[in-house]
Length: 160
Image (cartoon, rainbow, N blue to C red):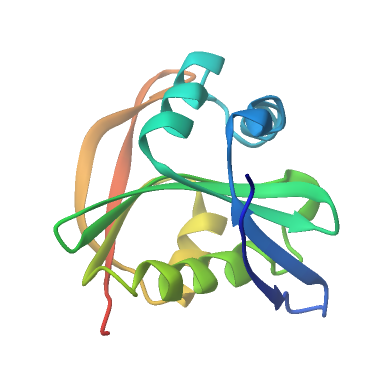
């Protein structure tokens, strides 16, 4: 059963909804993953994420326009994947979603981590504007068109 988690507005007033993800969302997740990433997760990895992590979907009306996979362990959470449909980027959806996710994850965690490609400046800007700070670099972390690419390790302290 799908659980509605919250409703909030993006910067242009669009009403967005978050809900829990389940296996029936796998095809839509895979389509968004493929549209948004140069090296997307495959179907097996999406299914593993649905099984092992907390999956949250972002909806504009009835349409899934984004998602996040998070794992929490002993007061720390890690964002494994965060996607907003490329057609919805630049409209404040990503910022509104990460702001809500920080509040939601902060209910049970003290720290929230993520990795982001050093070349993904729009995402880095969203994360920094939401309060994340760079805490390290993972060298050669991501596959890239020409070899490997570094990841910025970012974190935010969550105060309950």
